[in-house]
Picture: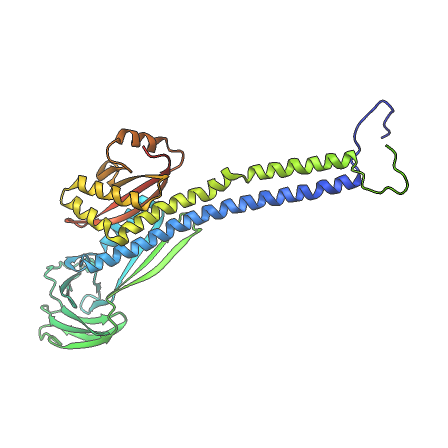
Length: 233
Length: 161
């Protein structure tokens, strides 16, 4: 287009255009940096929250173990972990999963049930500084039986001796037979019955672990996670 | 003005000046977007949140929170409040104000612990009008029933009352 004499304006030369282009590129980069920085800070804040929550849950569970809230001769203590997780979910808005895994359990041969510590079929009592008693119930509601809830099938004494646990069968008052396990290790089979098989016997296992709790905390978007396994002995 | 043959230099043309103006305008715009408000918005809040979380952590580690919980269990609510107030005032910087609540909002075991005793109405107003509040929350076991309850610390930047 040709400009007439009375028409005025600026002509952006090639050099001027070259000067403007880097400015545009620089501006775009700066905006990107700001956006990424904001996202990083937001992620950091969420990560902090997740970390503080996970760390605090570990502290509480350790306190619960030290103060015998999990070994106070009550059955179904695993419910406390659900309550704790619910409390944290409500106050932090994070997703919290606590999964307890007790090491001692029995397999009842007559009804085929597996009864774990921490459930309604077992009570744990801290009887002395390094001694615990586990009281199991062998009858099973889910198998259509009516438990008498006397929790003496079997009664196990667990003593912490150095880096080992000595487990003694103190009693078994039932016609049923059970196998006793420590984690995946079979300690005795066919315990109990009318002949009170193996009652009075003891066995030592390597390790002093009695309860493992898996702690898993994450924000609802799944951007940050905290995962740990707490070993209680 | 005419240049003689032996005089040398750069001529800064009008369109170059305009280009420089565009560059300056763009750069100023970017600087404004990434200014102190945004930097504070990002890092200031993060710091505030860390103040709150670290304060609760310090109270746990020093055993102050255990003492407060035991005082509450014994019904000594004002002593628990005074202790919490003193401890938090020592932990948090002067420009950071706080409100501590133990228990749920509608039925707290302890509430309205502010940086200074009394003046609750003024502190409450300051809390409600704070531009930005960071929250730290914990769960604790409360004797004698050994039930879980929450501990919530709100912090904000503001002047002392």
